[in-house]
Image (cartoon, rainbow, N blue to C red; front, top):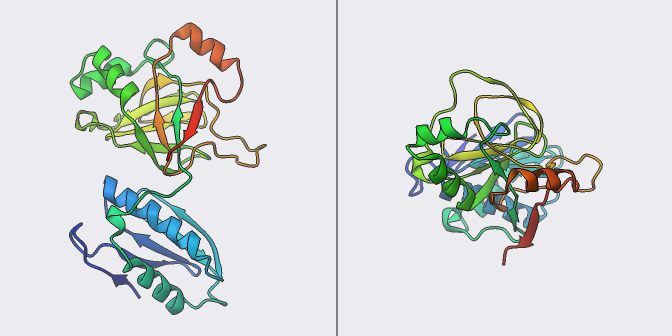
Length: 252
């Protein structure tokens, strides 16, 4: 059974749907927007605060919150009722962001042989390379979700000029720490992989640390700046350790 509540987003949003035997998905839109991403993050934090018996875990995507539970101890109808009651408690699109978020500054080399598609991306955005670097390095972006690879963040949203498409063909491989851009988002790659996103910057941070108690460095809701650093400074930061010169502070 699907429960829906009409909202100002248009259509039947948010929407509660079952996912398999032990999952429920609460979606706040059918496409990315700041209010929908905010709602997903805030609602997931509220679910965690409820500490309902029978809930095994929760997570977020760009515009949805997923809840996995034990249907033998907590029947679907009861779980849906709990979620619907929580959903109707407030306007989640205007909710405060969850506590515990951090602002990260991750030094980045733009362009050069380290990030060879800066010029191509700048042209697609209608910017000079200098203006593109200024825009990318000074725009504070949110970790909207973690996905595709362990610890890999999708970050946004960038100004409208960055609503550029992905490439039609894949780049054979980009390195770990690559900063890429498309569709008003950045992706900071946690692994070396093929991609259709344009490689505009290179960082030295290692985002996935399986040996750590907290293997994912960035968390949904964190904010990130990618300040410019020169090639020589980048090489020194790359040799300095897994943070690659990245720093963070609590958002209050």
